[in-house]
Amino acid sequence: MRAVFWKELADYFGSWRFFILIFLICLVTLYATWAAAEAILDDVTDAPTESVFIRIFTTGGTVPSFLEFIAFFGPFIGILFGFDAINSERNRGTLSRLLSQPLFRDSVINGKFLAGLSTIAIMLAAIIVSVCGLGLATIGISPSSEEITRILLFYIMSVLYVGFWLGLGILFSVLFKRAIVSVLVPFGLWILFVVFMTMIAGVVADTMEPVDRYSEAEEVAHHEDIEDNTVLISPVHLFKEAAGIVLDPERRTVHGLTGARMEVDQRYLPDLLSPVSLRQSVVLVWPHIITLMGLTVICFGISYVRFMREEIRST
Image 1 (cartoon, rainbow, N blue to C red):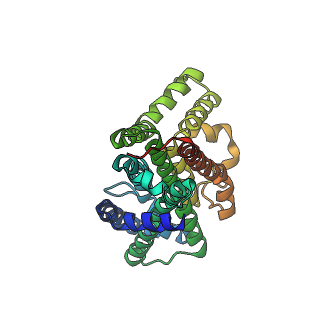
Image 2: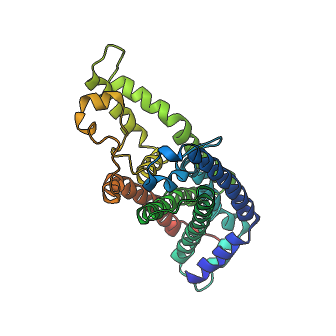
Image 3: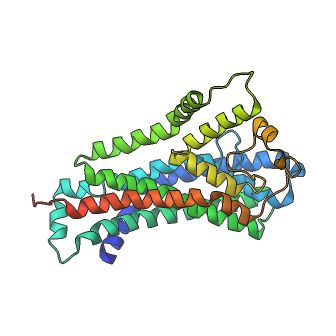
């Protein structure tokens, strides 16, 4: 597996796909960070000192925030690294030659997945460090130890999130022989989760708990809970909600506070603006982290079992 891992890692870092992708990502994310820093500087006097620096990840200016960028384009990165991991070898006739060597079959798929995940981890680490450096130079405020820990937790969640899409890409690379099919299917799921999941959640909520302007606050709050819970079927929204809680110390609920929820539950009103500790934030997002990890393991596990059982003939 070590030989496959280093060979695949060298292929990733030496491909034009990687250089073009890292250039576009760095260009967009650094511009988003600069726009966020400019927006933060406009109202830095009104912001709490302990949570200024971390706002460069959640503040949007003329472009979406860094968090929204990772949530939207993270699947694009994972799919591009995984959609042709197996079927490209099969179509070129090199997979049977590779397995004819004294090499275990599971070493091939394990090495490919670990190489792709390592490439994603290195790429995200470089981007986040660059964003922190630009934010520090622009804002001029150093992050606290808690903010650094929150950024590290956000980094781990980002790797898990993009790793899920990498596992999904490898899964369809094993299931389909043609690369065009293995890239179109996960991109179709990406569009479903990003664009249509909110509309589907709204339809489900309207069906289960219809509301109008005469509805009671409890009914409106229940309607919002159904909609928010349904949209979490999407890994995109699952990651956005979890990362938003980690990067926002002032957010103390999972789905956020609305007028109906505050009217139903009055306990949030006295300390609505008081920041929460890192431990409390981790408690809120722990189910999200476990879910992202489980989805990644399931996708890779299915592709692993299918690859180990399929017949591979020489061409």
